Length: 110
Image 1 (cartoon, rainbow, N blue to C red):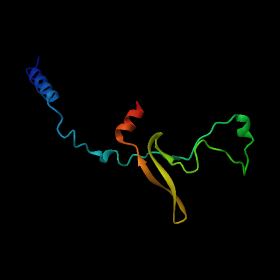
Image 2 (cartoon, one colour):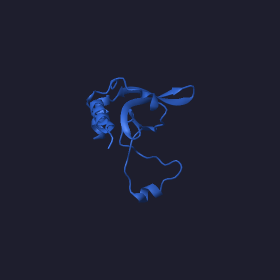
Image 3 (cartoon, rainbow, N blue to C red):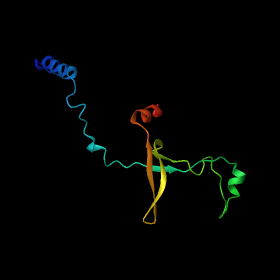
Image 4 (spheres, rainbow, N blue to C red):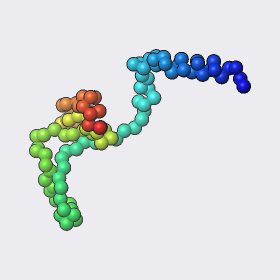
C-alpha cells in the first residue's frame, strides 16, 4: 500500500473546495469560430397540402404578418432580434431595430 495515496486525495479534495479562479473571465475565443445558422423570417402561413401542390410561378402566398411589421432574426432557431429590410449597394440586408436581451433568450430556451 502506498503512503502517497492519502496525501494525493487530500490535495485533490483541497483543489475541489477552492473556487475556480477566473470563472468570471471566461475565454470566449474557443467558440468564436463556431458556425451558426442565421435566418430571417418575413412571416408564416398555414395551408393544406392541396393548396401547396397548386403553387406555381407567379403564385402569391399571403403571410400572417403585416407589410410594415419587423422581421424576426433567429440564430439556430432562437429568436435574437427584430429588424427591417434595407438595400445596400443593390443587395438586401437587415437593420436590427430591437435585440432580445440575453436573459430573455435564456428564458425562451427553457
